[in-house]
Length: 82
Image (cartoon, rainbow, N blue to C red; front, top):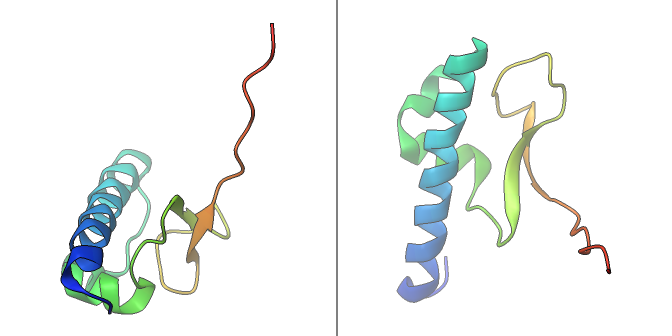
């Protein structure tokens, strides 16, 4: 798990992703894995959020489940030059 300094920021960002997932699921009426109501279970299934990664669904027509979710790093789009 690394030292505590590494754990705390990653844990906070993982918690933000967890809360954001519930807000998104509520708005779009998507199913969320029932065990994920408890953050430790979400963390056990998904692991810590890697730096720069976002929680994504492999199949956007399905809800948030361990088999349908993964951490993905989005490509960086350069600013257009003027």
